Image (tube, rainbow, N blue to C red; front, side, top):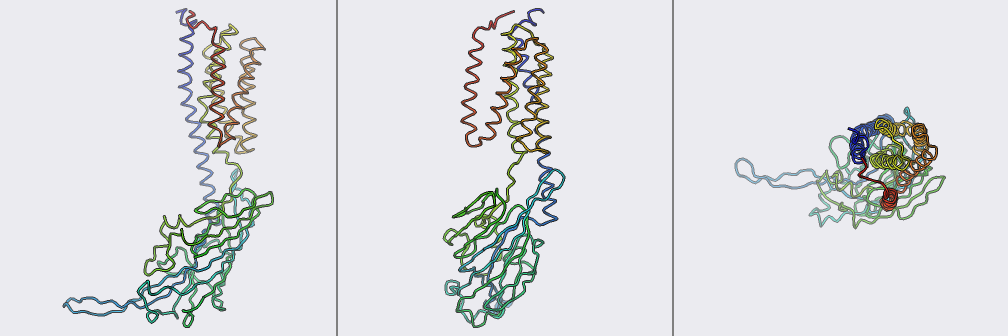
Length: 438
């Protein structure tokens, strides 16, 4: 049995098995990170449900009823003419959104939720529909029963009743009953008799609040948006990016201008109430700004934990080479203890990152783990030089992982080069090892 204790091959096999076994607690830590991240999402949802959710501004849409004459066959085979009320929908010719956001951060326990208050002015005009292309005559229209509809995704966020100005008349918006062309819509009834052949201007303001995101639906033949705010780490997302943007420590400003050529909606249509609420089409026409938190510690901690097997493997290989080169034995139980310390490292990182942020937590967890292993190894080997070298190696490994996490776009390139250098160093160090030693 003496050869088992002295065999380099057996020791390496044990290290390999131990690395695989340590992946079990590593996976449990990964599940813990996901659980905490889900807890954060649940908390954010709870806060936004109570405050106001992300806001999507849609419309306005001009709806004009019209008489449709249809011929049906009754039970006796006779032709019967009937008149049914249908709706003509017209999107704005020009649509402009202008507004500003005042942001703040709400706290629920250790979690943060960015919210905002804003005033958005909506203006533009409607022009006459091309009735001929829709097989409708002007005589069929009922302009005195026209309505203008618009929507925000969470009506709880409205702080005042919108006052809508149309053709120099001011109307107070009211909820729209029943199924309609926009979800959560508001409407104003307007008599357009005598105005169907001209331009119909509109103007109103939305004094609203929301959380995390403000988006717009591109419904104008020409849609322009000018939005500014005091949040200094915004993210612009959706189907269209801004034509111009400015981001500094004081906040941001952004401008969009889109034409209707790549808009998934026609300028006018009849009857179809689900056109604007179609999920795919609405997604293709939505854009806006997100108040992004500067650091997502759970995402970075998850990425860090994915390198657990690499760190553990490289640490054990380095320890094994240190053991051989210094000609001092490290008991297998001590390998297990060092492996346990490297697993606990990730729980330290997770718990500290929730309190003090990822970067500082990484420093605290790394220094604590490296110091613990270095002191433990120094007391085992009774060799200060070997302990210092191993401390340097561990510091290099953890610094390497931190750099990879920060360099998102270049992480693969930098990681591949660094691993190549590490393998080369290990190959050089292992040249004079007697692998057949018994």
